[in-house]
Image 1 (tube, rainbow, N blue to C red):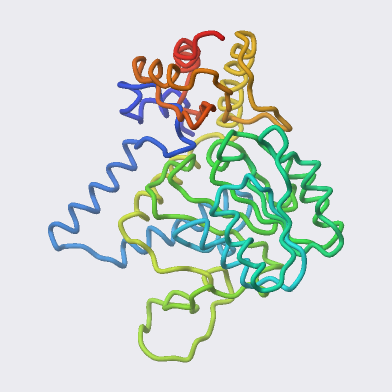
Image 2 (cartoon, rainbow, N blue to C red):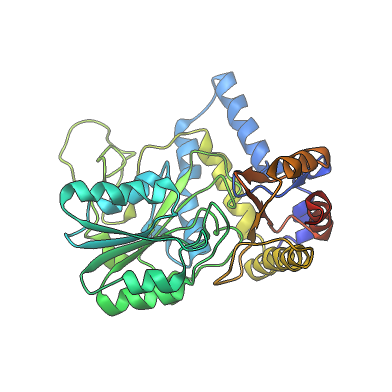
Amino acid sequence: MTDLASFRSLFPALERVTYLNNATAAPGAVPVLESLRRVQAEWESGEFSWQAWESEGEATRDLFGRIVGGAGKDVALVPSVAEAAATVATSLPPGRVVVGEREFASNLFPWLALRDRGFDVVEVPALDGVVRTEALVEAITGDTVLAAVTEVQSSNGFRVRLQDLGRRCREVGARLFVDGCQSLGALRLDVDAAGVDFVAAHGYKWLLAPRGAAWLWVRPERLAEVAPLAPNWKSIPDPYTEYYGGPLTLATTARKLDAPLAWFSWPGAHTALELLTGLDPVAVERRCLDLAATFREEAIGRGFDLVPQDEPSQIQGISLSDPRGVRERLLARKVVGAVRADLLRLGFHAYNDESDVAAALDALGTV
């Protein structure tokens, strides 16, 4: 296991800035950067094997499975969360679909598009900027076929209680689709304990991978009902033996839902997931949540209004009366966060430490 002090040393950006913007994109870790440079060098030399690059993508199935508490054979390799959601959406039986109105578009538009097919798609309203767990649970009625939720909300860091949603979905026989983009890599997930049917995540945020690599985990009992969004050469049991002609015989594993791989992204993604699975996930989650809690308590003590919580989150949203001034102070103190409209969003990963909390509070100032 890699200790967290050694983990921090793998991020060159931290020598220059206080980086608290994983919710937008991760900074490059040295091992991941080295994988990308290796691929570039192989491409430049002409002495490369695209099959070797593919094999690195294939190896991420088991790693992602470990991260969510599932099996690699139940993991599909896809380019985005939007494609993962659309794959599930196009395979649903008729009925009611429940989604929060504050979802990021990639976990909203694929479900809203179902209205054109006659589905009753319910957008649960946000109060105080968040869609609370209780409101989602109440919206999941007996005719619901699927509820879609992001565990940690992209816009403001609000975290739902997945086990409550999973329990309600099991009560009515609905499916639960979870966007893990803003949680996996920082927070632990046990798909069985949470009652989740589908988990999708893009790798370029908390999973520390390059953009272009994403995953879809499917509960084995649900796999037969899901069809490929775009059947392709990767959809068959052994795609590396024959590339021409039919018939189309779908794989019996989640491979059938694969999209062709963007070769240069996946070696970096493989290294990133190896890096994360070499850490103690309990220690990672504790570090992330402890740092966020310390920041939250001090910011509230200074008079700031923070986004409410159902569950502790590693991302904190802070309401701002002077967003322009805060943006300028962040820039001057080399603190990297996201100021959007009148909200500041800061996130704490396991490579952060107490000095980063202090730097963020210094930049924030007082009300």
